[in-house]
Image 1 (cartoon, helix red, strand yellow):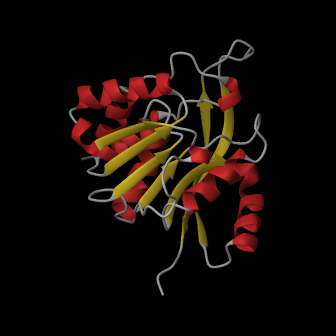
Image 2 (cartoon, helix red, strand yellow):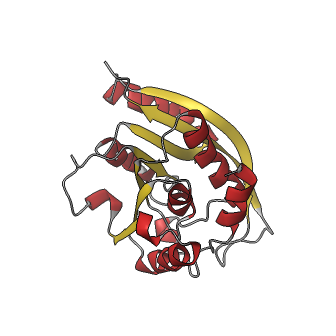
Image 3 (cartoon, helix red, strand yellow):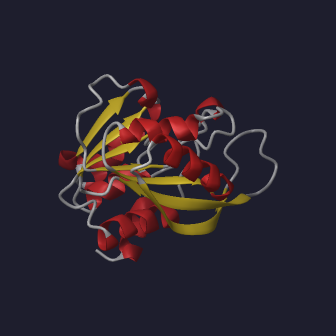
Length: 209
């Protein structure tokens, strides 16, 4: 599948019908989601045939995209309404047999954290409204897998690097891309027609001995 076709498919996944600010629910732009998944698959072979989990999946642009690329994907989100949208899209895309969905608080998972996934993909809360939630999502991801693709505000990458190096010195943290994204107004208090900011995609992994 070409990257443009993946982007076209991800554009079909709707934004959250009623996002909640305390969960920091923002839609991942389809272009960025496609780029993230394309890098993970084409450069590192971390999606197709792998057990993938999307933490804080929302309506599923990342998780459903991973399933489109051949991953067996688990979507986890605290918001049942968002997962209903993701489930409907999985059916429409014909990938429902490669998708599982669980409504749960990612930070308090209802299963043992030593369950092994091959890859975590996530666009976690940036910690603007819930301070530290970006780090909390990374810590949770590290309990589930050895390879993580995670999106963060670009101006937080230095802190994330220093935190991970201090608490997990064996990890390798690579910044795979940095780009500006623009999102439409999601909440009533948004006044601009679009809000633009820089994000970075990191790949965090434990090197094999």
